[in-house]
Amino acid sequence: MYAVIKTGGKQYKVAVGEKLKVEQIPADIDSQIVIDQVLMVADGDNIVLGTPIVSGAAVKATVVSHGRGEKVRIFKMRRRKHYQKRQGHRQNFTELRIDAIEK
Image 1 (cartoon, helix red, strand yellow):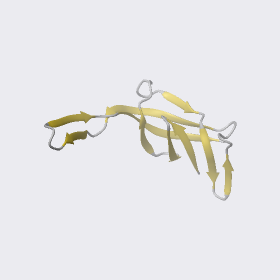
Image 2 (image 1 turned 120 degrees about the vertical axis):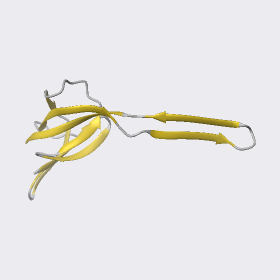
Image 3 (image 1 turned 90 degrees about the vertical axis):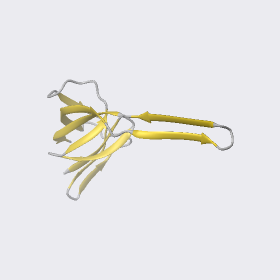
């Protein structure tokens, strides 16, 4: 059984027991959260598609940790203009463990 959820402007395929990193969610570590924006639920050959979300479906998850991703280096340059700009960015994330998928 798996589901497709939407959080942080992105879509993720999740199954019970797996961990995934999503955009930062303001929640405490070891707290339970419920994601109610479920776009699809599949249980074997039984597939339920939402328009745009499946009503009554929810995904329960536990917050495992918060962190920051790998550094992305940005380098801008204009040739022959003596312009160079260096910048870096690290995106914050929340790691979730999927506990249950409810239809």
